[in-house]
Each structure stands twice: as C-alpha cells, then as structure tokens.
Length: 283
Image (tube, rainbow, N blue to C red):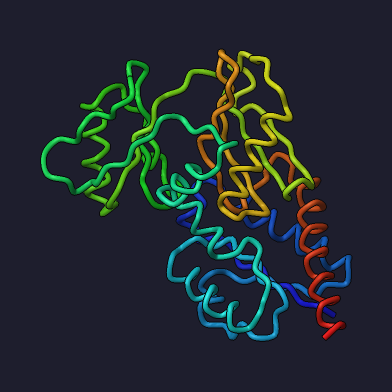
C-alpha cells in the first residue's frame, strides 16, 4: 500500500482560515484512504522533528522558507513526490510570483512595481497612473494578517503602509494599480482537471460579462507559471473586458467547495501515486 503524508499550514499563515485549511487537507486524506492509500496528518512542528522516510508522497500546506527547503532537500534525495512541490510553494511568494507571471503571456497582471521597504527617503511613485489608488502588498508570503495587503489612496498612504512593514521587518513591497471590476475567487486542480469560481462578495458584484474559458485559461497559466497543481487565486473582471490575475496560491482552503474539491484533489494525487507505482514495477 502506498503512503501519503499531509503537513498542515502554519497557524500564522492561516489568518481566519485555520479550521478551513485543516479541514480540506483532512478531507483529501479521507478520500485517499478510500482509494487504498495509507495516510497521516502532521502539524508543521511535528513534521520538523519527524523522520520523513517511508512516505511515497508528501502533501505540504506549510509555507515557511526553512521548512520548504528541508522538504525540497529530502524529497530530492528520496525521490518522494510532493504536491505542490516546495519550489511551487515558494513560487507563490509575491516577488517570485511577479517574475513568473512576466514569463507567462496568458497571464494579465495589473501594473505592478516593487520597492525596498528600507530604501532611503520617500518611495518613488510608480510609473503607471494611480488616480484610482494602489494596493500595497508585502513582497514575501501571502496574508498573515489584515494589514499585509492594504489599499492606499495615494503615495502618502503608501508610506504609512511602508512604515508598518518596516516595523514588522518586511523587506520588500509591491505597489499594484487598483483595477475596477468584479473581484472573483477561483480554485483549480490540474492543469485541465477541474476549475470553479465565485464572487468574493455576491451582493456588491456588478456581474460584468466575461468568458469563463478565458478566466480558466488565465488562472491555469498563472498556476503553471508557478508549478502548481492544487491552486486558488483572485482575479478581476474589468468593465472593459480583460481579466486580471491578482494573486495565486498553493493549497487554498477551498472552503465553499470543500466536498467537491476534496474528491478532485484526491483523484489528482491518486493518479500521481499510480504513476509512481507503475514506474516502480517497470524497474
């Protein structure tokens, strides 16, 4: 029997989502058990002290750099499958994500520039027009609290966010143009296996017309650029028609679609394990 270990996300990286993050990973492991896979769950702290030998697949929701580097080193030497891979998870760190998107023509990102939080003097305003305001985002991990991504009306507000980042020892920030439109959350497994979406706030959504296939292609291109198989993210459908991808992440909570997502994710993981079993038989 093949074996799969799931590693939960760090609590500080699951703001207001601690339970949802744990529940989707638990649901996936339960689905795998029905498909003759031996499973176990560990907290990141438990995994830090555990011997990782003997697992055919490791599924990491954890996001901190030292843990991901330990996993990367171990799995490379042990030929253990990881989904998503440590490199893919690190690819969701915002500065890396920005670089990956630049090499993905199918991904339309709002105009975005980076700045050093520790730069001397006031930050230079971005080259793009910002009369509608900016989104200021920490340059490394995704949200750990409500003020890691902040709307700024002007550069004065940007400087206030910068000061907060400096107090928290965050080194870099992104300044991103605010795009008017409907904010959409999407989830996917693939490429090409399963995709779904919903409005962040159905009550305020204007329900601007868009092509679902265009959204799916852009989202999967963004996931592919980062190397993700299990992914979620955010997009803006603009009144003019273009769809902007504003975020992509590894192993989201899938909270609104957990039952369906757990089946689709388990199907993906089991297919990868079957490929591993097949390759072993032919050796």
